[in-house]
Length: 72
Image 1 (cartoon, rainbow, N blue to C red):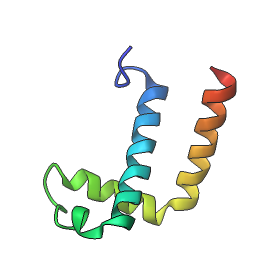
Image 2 (cartoon, rainbow, N blue to C red):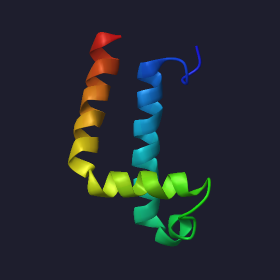
Image 3 (cartoon, helix red, strand yellow):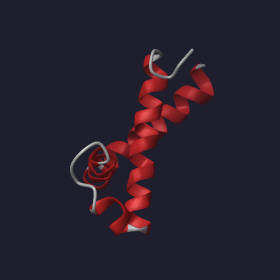
Image 4 (tube, rainbow, N blue to C red):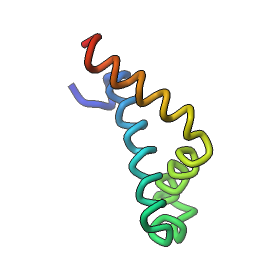
């Protein structure tokens, strides 16, 4: 089944997108900062969410890992 139609997989994809964008912005800020508007602005927004809400994102990663390892 596609990750778009499975809710748990969709949450996993969104969480991994946030973590990846935050990591990329930490390593190469100019890569994401030049695209603040438009379709590529989604990646910049995900990086901002990861930077500002990092404790919540970390808790979500732990919950997701526990869910994948022990629930499924």
